[in-house]
Amino acid sequence: MIDDRGREFGKMIPDHDVFWIVSKCAYGGLSPDVKLILERSIMVSLPFFHIVNGEMHHVPRYNKMPSLSYHFYGPDISADEKETAQRLIAANALNLYAPEYSVSFHSSMSEMKEALA
Image (cartoon, rainbow, N blue to C red; front, top):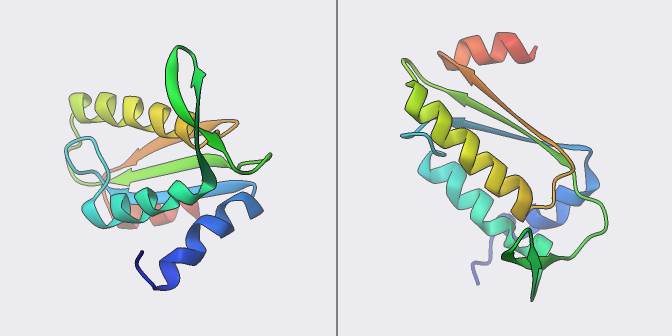
């Protein structure tokens, strides 16, 4: 176990209505740093499994989870990268038991900041 403030991260997720994830688009996926943080959110699940839509998934720890709002930025994000990101986020939403999710793409961080302001 890594003993840092990241341990608090998973406990904060269910306390919100929307969980915003902002990342540079890396080949249709999250940047390595953002991916690492998201992977550490495994604590929102229990160490037990059940079947959801024919797939094995962890059992949720909390009754209520937030919606997910993903925002990718980067110049020239290709159609293939967008498609990959959409599939990834759909899988993440299922794993995190999000009631709904959205994915947005922005050509730069400054454009994204303007869109979210």
